[in-house]
Amino acid sequence: MAEELTPETPENESDRTAEAEGTEEPIKQRKNGLYPEVSDELAENMKSGWADTDLHDLEPVAQAAYTERRRAALSARFPGERLVIPAGNLRTRSNDTEYSFRASTEYAYLTGDQSHDGVLVLEPTAGGHEATVHLLPRSNRENGEFWLDGQGELWVGRRHSLTEAGQLLGITAEDVRELPQKLREATGPVRVVRGHDAGVESALTDKVTAERDEELRVFLSEARLVKDEFEIAELQRACDATARGFEDVVRVLDRAEATSERYIEGTFFLRARVDGNDVGYGSICAAGPHATTLHWVRNDGAVRSGELLLLDAGVETTELYTADVTRTLPINGRFTELQRRIYDAVYEAQEAGIAAVRPGAPYRDFHDAAQRVLATRLVEWGLLGDLDVEKVLELGLQRRWTLHGTGHMLGMDVHDCAAARREAYVAGTLEPGMCLTVEPGLYFQADDLTVPEEYRGIGVRIEDDILVTEDGHRNLSAALPRQADEVEAWMARLRG
Ligand code: GLY
Ligand code: MN
Ligand code: MN
Image (cartoon, rainbow, N blue to C red; front, side, top):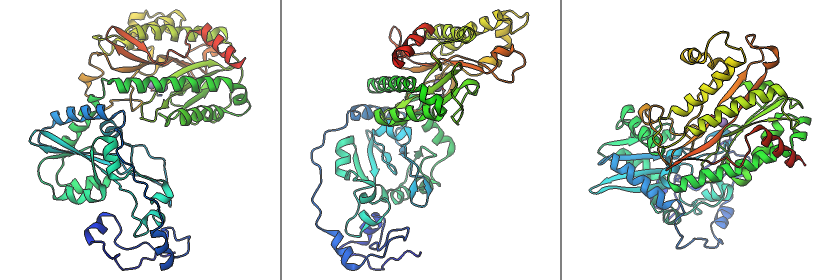
């Protein structure tokens, strides 16, 4: 059905304001055309009779003091340059239905805001930069936007006014619909974080280069390597909620057996949505041989007594910090002898890895420590012929069964700080405030003819979230048991 718009501009509204508010004419019909056209009388009626809901004198959000410091560090790195950091836009799933939105990590980190279409701009000034956050304002009631547009507040909920947002975030807020024109008209050096907002990028095409924009992305990735105290508290919250989610799963393993891995995924997801914002990544609910597929997220397999469940899942908090935790659990509550032998080797490797996490240590140490333990066990089990451990490690032959690196930085992104330079990350040194996963594993594929048949189809990973402290480390996910006897006792208690 055709969209019908009347041609007149509402009285007392200048062209400039109308353009800024995104619609030049009153809206007469919902975009999808499924509703009858709006009569002039109804349009008039809907304009008025609404109470003033403006909020006054709002206190800044808890994160505001931290985001200010983060912006100051960014400002100091790029003096004299305009910096543009978009949150990203909604993505259509079909027609007028959108995928759930998550603000870009860079934007949320620097503003504490999570609005779609938001854009942070740092304008260079004599003394540094002035920050402005560009946001969608409250919906226009005069032209019908608020109840006829798909993103009108009547459909999607109230937004903060620009004044309210400014008070909450501690940053001046302006109408984002005016931003592309401003960016086109602006002069001087500019950089943008790419990949989030095609509209903003197209307004800057002639002014930016990929190389310079990459420097901005790298800086923001490295800035997040060391967490501030707000971030550490969020990561602890994420781990605590994740521990509750794992307990939820253990309690329903009987029901999961009667259905599938999906029951486990849904159970954990409920916890993530109630205690946090979402899961921080697709939950890996891998029962039996699926545990040997590193990123098994189809989760459509059977859950069988006697097999292991590898559950790799993390709650993302409302402020967008995620945990990343794995436990490998005997579905019926008891490890078999072989399962336990493999589990104990991974546990021992993880203990060695965690012990290597301390300030001043090369980042790679924890990986090397864990790999050495696993190679030693694989040699002992006779899986590597006559080779000794040193030779195995030199050739990396243990990697047929250890498969992946032993961990990664963790924060707002599950694989956090991924754009950091090698020297700042994998070839760097651990510092207090860094948070990383330690997650060794052993995986014997179901079709691996080089191992005894009874090993095939067994996969074990144990993953915890470890904060580097001034004097060593703290395990943020320690609430969940790891040692085999403790896992069995914990499961028995929860299943009562
Ligand atoms: N959950 C993905 C990982 O452990 O890295
Ligand atoms: Mn991980
Ligand atoms: Mn994981």
